[in-house]
Length: 516
Image (cartoon, rainbow, N blue to C red; front, top):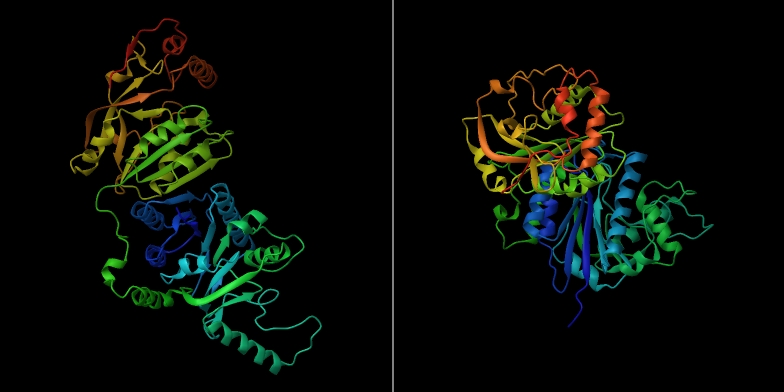
């Protein structure tokens, strides 16, 4: 059986919605004969709709990994040019190095880096693989300034020298111009040519990856841009750089290039109607659900299990990390990488004044313009049938708030019920429709302030028979920890009941087996 080369198409993405839609449609149209193609995107988007579009692409295509970036940088461009700074350049370099690490670990035959403002001819990928080069880029042309001529993204020497020269050679302006025009003419003719520098649309072989190519900064080099450091490092370890000019890509460098990008796609897929080319990017008509959660050092407890249980029905997530010193944040990023996720990290814990922490959670969640909010803790998950019934709760228009029964588990299989532990006999709010026109008011008490504002029940509300499992008491070590914490933050039992605090240490509590 003939081995099919495995190719990983990858891109760090910080892109506006309309351009990203065209980029992804271009990837969909790539021919992949005799190739096994997967995708890897680092989602660095500010725009939630752009993040959602990546997820739609993932659902449509299948073999797509989306890694959510934790950066919150502002990248500026205007009608003239793009405005990069040193931090942004090396942030992207780090993203690309992470992708290289992934491609090596997964043993891909080729890694294809392509910037998210490029549109590819359908034949590009197959053609580049057929050239059997260690490093080869497909050419594209750009007016770096509006008044300038188009130039390719490849060069021959140094930072961006696009004419042949030799060390010590003294050339007149006329000689430079002639050699420059010769290079430009050559790049306009279909062929494969050796160059000194390239980037943005580059196929890299497994051999080159194993030899150590990467985008890290070379300390004794002042050249601008991570691609220069990549190319110099590649040449230094004996790898040649090539450019293919058979199927030039289209560069959407400015918004004014979008119209031409649409024409490029249409030209390269003549049998398709324009209306079938675009991935659906409209805001979903069904109500969306935002998971809102506070975490602190939950990595060795139930965080991973809880997040996975919520993942099938949430559309977004907002996580407040209240000073974790373990891998809780990394777990959130890993499990929630398929949904837009906002993570806010507190350097100093606010738990001693819970009301301040809950207000922060509410404010940060509100900033995401949520539809419905599911406010749960990192040790709470719903019974299995919640997955099948939650959509009905979200789609009805009569109620803005739902309350549920919470069961305090004292083991993995049993919950507690006695004179101090009967939370499951009452209903408490977990699910709320966010109303911009409602004035929310908080119970100003350091502890036991509630997860929602105190006037939340002024909204039209109802109860659900779906149940919530609370595992925060399910092990002795957890109970001892909580007992000590309550004694520390509420020694006078001003916000709780002393007898209930003491009952945490009961050796033979009344336990009832849970039945799904």
